[in-house]
Image 1 (cartoon, rainbow, N blue to C red):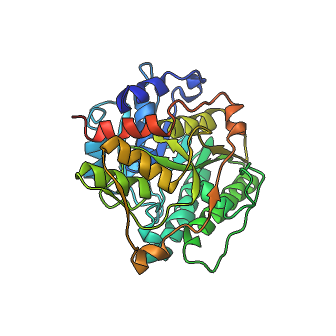
Image 2: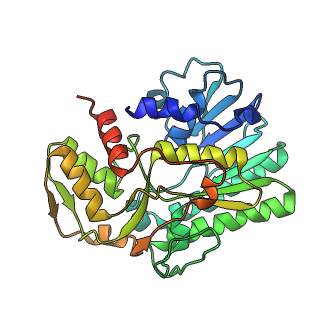
Image 3: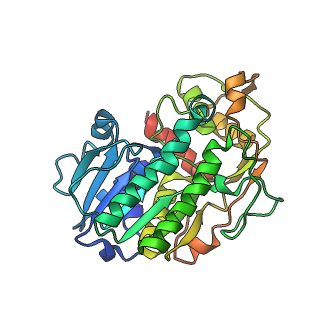
Length: 339
């Protein structure tokens, strides 16, 4: 199986899809890694009778990613930058907020923009939802909200330490604050809200400018280069293949409880950055080389040593990951470079 087969399999998952029947579903950040996969799964349902509104800033990228759906009466493109007030004329029953500045280079080059996109972007959507009969809002947060822990796997009730004076916290702190904003809207205005906290997620639809480590490593081998690491790569992370992650998000959308958060992680994909580099290097028949990072790169590094998420709560809704780290990376690379 490759990426397209994984999407089809996810669209056949045993969840109550009829909850979406006749609904309008807005997905912001639809050109991003996770948002695009959510759209693909929704559009792959053979008996779909709901409308998917894919929102993003780049119409060219939307047309490229979703070429097979452009002429579908159930697919709609919404050109929108979430930092601006949302002015539209459709009542959305569901909003999936996937827009976020998740490119690590932005944490050192545009930290103010990262914070505004996260907090103000969701505020704009919730303001719209209050006025337009929104039934449920799903915020895609991040496992980063846990910060530094004590070595245990993070459950949804855990609250780790985040240094608010560290520039890298522009992402973590704004994600935390936005979760509280969601809960505040739910309590004050009666909107149903659920929160998804994905772990580090990987898959094929990353951009050339994406500086997340897996994207850099894959670009190295696709160019026929050895993998270049900018640290020893000792940090340990939970990882999840994007199709498994996107399906987890749809489980939370349809089955998640009001005012609750759900971790999304694959218990069979807990590796260090170095171990991930070694897997990708082996797939591409290359070597791993360590080079010194630039000062700008160092300022964007995640200082958390161990970030392991416990996804038992999501699994209780029926979700399971299907691709472990090696399978997911093989599917990702094969999709980008099929021959």
